[in-house]
Length: 324
Image (cartoon, rainbow, N blue to C red; front, side):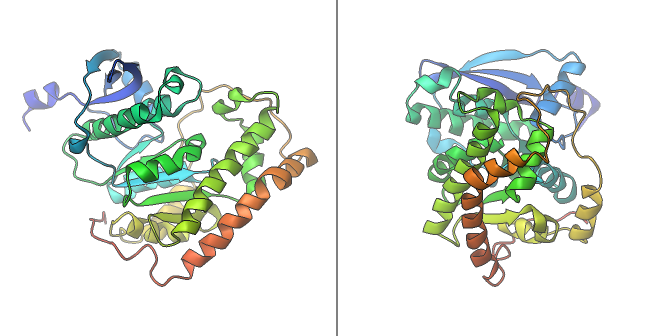
């Protein structure tokens, strides 16, 4: 590519999405020239804004969904369980094209914005369209497209299974008391949507609801599209995760992943606490976990052990490329 061509390349990514008639109004920003391994899409957008790149908007008529591309893999997670570390590792160690928690998809899934008033088929069409637009941010990079969703969207994972059957999907989770203790120390932004039940019951219920949704799907098809991974075994599971996503694991992947895990892969935290902080050792937190989350967690663990007992689970569809 010539110098002139490099300077004129535009790689827009959708930042926000609004319903306009049967189409969409997309707010975009150009990320050409920026690195592609940011921990979150929001960090990449902030980097583009720091370069004074403007936001732009355009209206898009309904897409012929028969032509819409699908992701190569989807990552769902319970939150505070290593999902960001995994996303960064797949981008840096496996040459994957990873989009982490895309805001435009969150817009469509949110129950507090414009989209909540629209019927699900209309929202599904928007999700398919937005997913189709995500690869534009990577130019001609041929790596597999892996999309990591926000933790609260796991409640809608059945919708994704219906839209993209056959696409490999991963659910990452963690011992719930450890996860809730992390939430207590650094409350999630989505905790602001708590109602009368209070922030911590709302956060625990959101985690438990997501776990139950995943467990129900896996129970119906234990060796189907879904792979379950507990954070306690994440490092040793990374080669199997690559196999699940049809990638050949890079050389010395586990060792290199463990080195990466000793670093802070997240950018500086610019957010503000969205729920009151509590002491992670507060006995009340353990009570919430046992009352709200424990049963769903135990159900997932039983299913994960069934999957793990299957010979070569996660290694039966390896066809990608690795980075040595």
